[in-house]
Image (cartoon, rainbow, N blue to C red; front, side, top):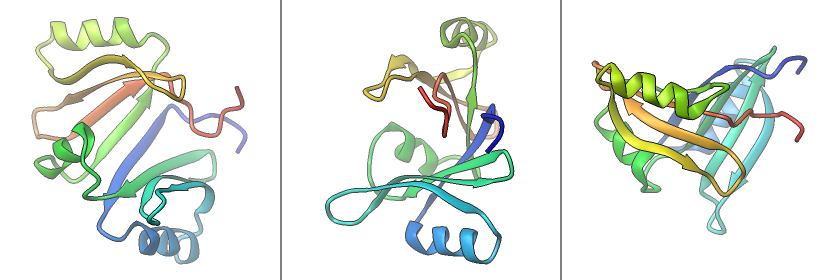
Length: 133
């Protein structure tokens, strides 16, 4: 991958392992990372195609994102932004439905989550899949 993508669609699947197989085998994606729980549930995976990345995981794991996706539109999208807090302030000032305020994550990123007018879930943060830190 030559450039770190700024927009990474994030999808949840009932059978994430089957989705990874289809995306890699049928559609030519490359498996970049797959993190599974001790019981073998896909918690987070990154698949690349060209300079783009799709992040995915298993449905039913709980948490704010999984709960928001239950009632949301067909996708969740993660967008890398330079200044998470300034971006959050702008979104809140324009009446966005903020699901999670800016939060420092254990893996070093900072992000927040919002829902758009159609129920899609958008996460904005500093995490850059595939970037070397």
